[in-house]
Length: 455
Image (cartoon, rainbow, N blue to C red):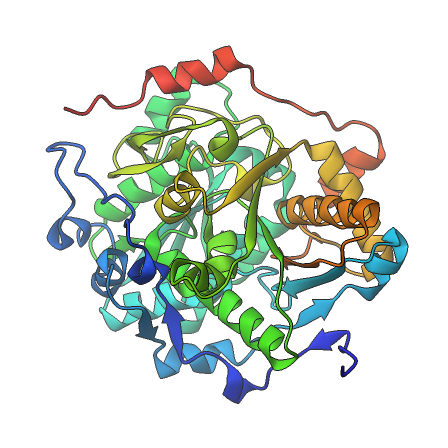
């Protein structure tokens, strides 16, 4: 068999021309978003007050397996896509494992992560609709950075509410956003009614993605010519991120490689959903079989310890209700350094797949995550983002299992981005100042007790 290169590159003509919509192949679809006032499924008209019109259509589309990528978006993609699929030969050698390990590297753009795949799409549709600007939230700052880049490209205003603890931990990520013209506000803030209410209820809080979402939605709905955009969780975002999985599958198919295990970090679900969607489609159609593993922080364990129920997508309870694995919209996660994974819920698509037993989930503590990140950086030459390092940790675990059993499994994981703006986290790890917070059952129960009661 031909020697597999270190990096498998597709040429730009092999880049996907359409996004893949996994919902089309799901016999049991994700539950619809509900209007919190009426308890009925949200209509396109209702969603159109918050989101761009075309994005609403994509959000509600459960039937079309493929949705064409507009030429303007593909032209932008070509600046940094197709991204490489890398054979981790050095990591394999270090582990002395018979496993074959590959990672899809999404950090080769200025935003430093996969988030740009959806940011440019959402900015494009906002511009096409004639809007003045968009609002959003960001955790670690990767989504905010990506959206600020996309808005700058299309000359749109960009208002970013950044989770306060990340705003303070990652000042340079904030400055990249400002370089691209974004207005960045630490959340919760005094600039919105919801922010003031949250500060009153939780004085001194470092915030959460749920808080920041509430503020961003309020900012969008009270400004003429603005809409809200989101970097994860929603169906439309997983759709745009399917470009990751489509490229991964094309690269593997090029060399006749079939993965056994596909692993991704999971916060809201954009990276994991994008990576696994085309492979999950094969499983849903009965064509092939794979193991899928979602990896989340033990400090915010929505899949592994959450409830599958309808819940608000935000802390301020202004967003629609989504059926998902959730810790409760009022749950404020500990300030761990994987800011992009500090969300109380999980994508409705991934939640439904997990509930059907098609997806595994594992939670890991952050000191183990950083040990894996450091080990990876030392042999593979890339400093991974803390979020990505969750997937690295479990990929190493699975490779070590192969070493114990002698099985030659093929493992693929998503390396969603780089960690060069996360040096405060690495510093705390190296100084022995990093802890491993795991919420108690009693703490989680407080969030479950406040889940909406639906008739």
